[in-house]
Amino acid sequence: PPDALSRFLAIYDERLLVHTRPYPGTAAALEALGSRASLAVLTNKPLDATRRILDGLGLSPFFEPEAVLGGDGPHPRKPDPSALKALMARAGSGPGRTLMIGDSRVDFETAVGAEARCCIAAYGFSSHTLQGVDTGSAWVAASSADVLSAITEFVALAND
Image (tube, rainbow, N blue to C red; front, side, top):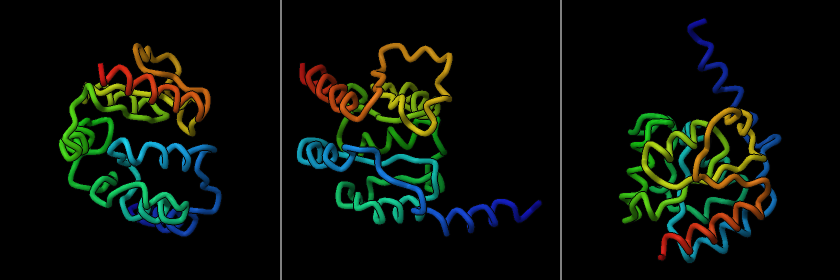
């Protein structure tokens, strides 16, 4: 029906934080990284909903407002790499100094399209979309601790 999307978004908007929780270790990882790296959020969710989720989970302080891009912004939605490239440019970074952490085929394809490195959270909500995908040199993390290990390894490689 013509109003299906607007009805879905209204229902989604009412329930944003009903079951949404950060993965264990997320806040601690962001705290540790915040002083050493430029952090950003790139999502296909609407920007207003994304900001409300970040606020509700207490994660907003880790991200400058301009470093949070939603799927309804000026850039095409992922897997188009232009939003990630814009975030890299904003941070004064290039592909070799950018690590995208995601949990889906779309995230992986976005990183590849931007020529950035990628860490796949195999425990994430959309990790099933990666079945059969050759993730090549991407890190595949089975836990938050594995994500931190991948970040540490990435930083060492990027600084060589």
